[in-house]
Length: 182
Image (cartoon, rainbow, N blue to C red; front, side):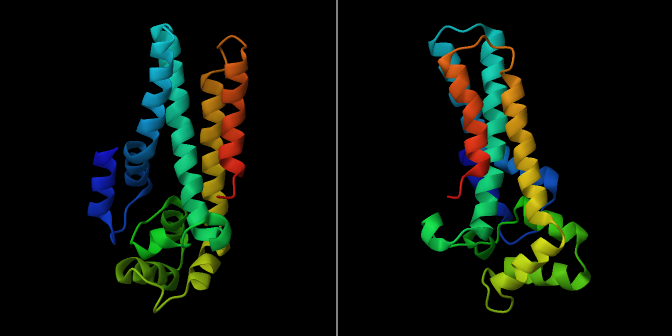
């Protein structure tokens, strides 16, 4: 997790691709979710196969969680989010929606996004302008669809486990992660 945070600090203000983004959020978030789930299996003396399924569940849930967190940073209202909105962009972090827009945008769109990332502010380009670019290219929807796919992968990774109240709760969590507003 620390390695992921350090890697993110190194990438601030720089353009990254989707592969680098997923590596970063795996290290930063999904790894913690994965090991937490595996430890839950270990303390209940689950088989190595079940521990592995729980780890895969945690990895996928962590990826979904971080993608949604990144989208909310861009789109949520500050009073609901409980922190300044668009802080990731202002800090120079390229998230999945931003990467998607950079790959599909016009030259002017890419320049606007690069300006915010490099200046680490909305002084030259407004947050509204960036949101319009992301909406126009379907980038926010793309990021949410990707998060939902990881949430479904989390559910599928534990599908073979026997029914229990714990499994029922674990099957509920991915839906909560992808529908939250903060």
